[in-house]
Image (cartoon, helix red, strand yellow):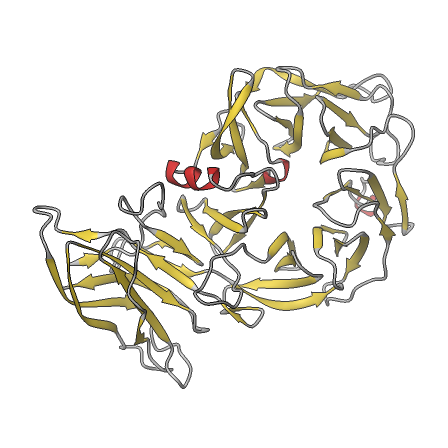
Length: 485
């Protein structure tokens, strides 16, 4: 009997319903003539690239051939070789997330040579041509910016606790006209995030969203954007930093409006110029998130690697990271190993992401380390990556009778271990996934032992079986299908 390894992660209110869970591995569809219609691949590992110092990396942005990062209260630039500048400027805050955007280089024919940064308290401008750093003040600058976007030569910010948006002068983040302000007043909820999506200004509020377009109005006489007729959606967010763009879509952790309030419904995806948000989170996962207590600090980013586009959503207060694979439309969890017994699932190390010089780079949430994320790295900075696949239950679907399992084996990529063969472990539960046996190891072969099969025998008797596979050895992970007798 085949035992599918790829099913949705669906641990919800009761393990007795299903305990299916996928940690540090993701699915990929296979060709029609393959052994299985889908298989599991281990998530990328991380290797050290450079380190800014002891302070966490709060944000990263690529501009003009350099990577700019905020670590602690300082801004730094980093070359493609990993060489770090001295501090380019100092922010008013030392912790929390930052937003970063640029308005292009004048050497390209258009641009203002400016990198703008916000931290919830102030706004800052670094001019890459003059190497000058300044704090924005005066004029129509509002202070307390909660979100930052760049569109059509303008920087746009939303202000915390208000319905207002403010706009800079063209190609000039240091000048903010007193008349270049507007209110997103479709409904009386406050602005949470502003986002440029396909040259439309998306205003994500608490319980609703609005879509605005460029009217060409000069900032000296008014705000250069207006709301599109009828473009008010009944989805907003309590987590401003959860908004991210990828797969030609906008993703965010959403609240659906109910009267003058809202209820969390999980992540929504807005594709291209389709103004209809599509909820993409199964109710079982939404239920798990609802147990976190608070999700206002959740943040997200998108990246594409080897044919997959991922939306990575981290809940810092809950110490959890969830990932949506937009290519196969399945969720999985990611966790960076912290030594302990038994193994615990924690959040992933990545605090921000940047694609720089062909490298997938992650900033550390605990220190100033920057890691390169690679599919051929099988550890996280030298620590084990623990891939766990807990499967849906196996039972007698006709009679719900007792079953005896003589043998189980897993068809997977083998012969890729070290001189001492790598292992995969199996444990199982016969009480609905509440209590599991101790892990039993099986070899996945030393180098060159490509015909090795991971086999376990005489697994016993039960009314239903829930199996859990784990790999922590530093080897490539490709799991195709399981078989039981």
